[in-house]
Image (cartoon, rainbow, N blue to C red):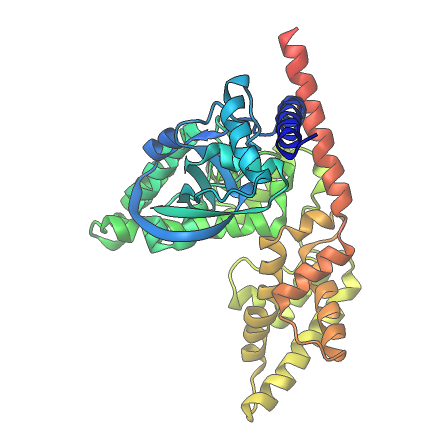
Length: 443
């Protein structure tokens, strides 16, 4: 058999394997409820407010981050495997060039956020993935948008892009508060509700000030004083795990409605934390996955009065499962006062020490726990319990000469001791249950 004949047989085999893999992927994607099709670049671009376009020149791009195409999105699946026989001749020509060591020109890509869309070179991407490559050379043109696009985005989620993009453009929040670009809702109509919240806040702010604040002032005041504090509580308490497939902003809208209801029925505003916990107790799913903080025990109340945290910081809780652990927390504060005095070379008041301990020690660790969703991996522990466990781990590492920051220590502790496998299995079971419901609905 000649070399050219061997190449012909090899490319025939490669294409048939690619087509069979595409068939299997279609079945797996349906069972796992994962995205199956490429995203059409024209539709994505039409739904976004593009701020600018920049030629990034030649880049080395991860193939897994290429999730769409400008014109051939229906010819390949999400893994860029060929879906139709019509691509066969061109696909085989590219594959043949691979075996013959023929150098092909770089592909051309559009980049939006972390993902890429093929402008030219769909078959080259397909063959490269079939041949097991992880990266590819590409000429990249980047389009800057306020809305980040994730590699997991599906065709159905495209409908939400336009509303989200319009909301960020109207508020300019992505520029005023960069973290606001991650505001996300599962229902597009919810963005109009957020605008109503902002307008309502602007009205009450004008009554308070005696004059109408500017749009930017009202938007920032709403974000900093209404939206962000409640979002922080949602992450800090871990209640998002009780609402699968919903976002923190979904919960914000529901909890604000619930807070208004409680205020009307009980005659007093319960505040964001109480409203969030009460809403979760009544409407959250899988409550065994979420350890909601119980009302403050007598020992916690005594600690808050001893430290004066209830006066120094509004709506503060330090929930612990074991009342005996409050003695350990007190030692943390006392030790902090001692070392703070040594660092400053002066006497530090108890009030100074408490505020410094809370702001520079306790709060950074609990924020790391909330932001990394570590509470979901330790469902039987409160955020105060996890603070003690992680600070113990942090001190152990530092005692071994390892310099490490609280955020990194929290991540390492979760990776070593968290019940990730349990959380993964629960997610699989939930997806299976949802598929069964759909099957019954169609019979």
